[in-house]
Length: 147
Image (tube, rainbow, N blue to C red; front, side):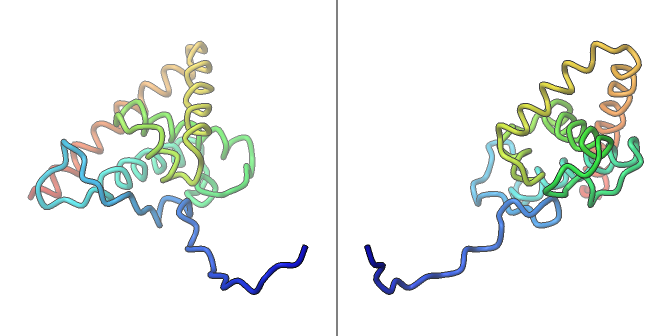
């Protein structure tokens, strides 16, 4: 079977390129503030979660947003960041997956692994502290935006 000469276009840039290049669909959520971009909120929240996890696990943001696993520490940091974005900020798993360059299913698995790891009291205490920090940072960022 021979192929005909079809015009081939290059695929668009990878929509899951990572935290810095997040482009959320142009659909406005019900609870969006007037004049605020719908892409700003998930990107901001995931960036806060990623920075907290990167700081806690002493990895770089590049390690968290990398397409490969890198190391166990980086993988755990990425899973915790996804968990924080989903649980602490109530983002849906699809948005979390897009921002972190993963699928919705990968984000769900990461959240499940972190939830299972919470059986360890030390890990649970550390994660509870990260959740509180995430919420405090979100309040601070929103107050700065409002001012």
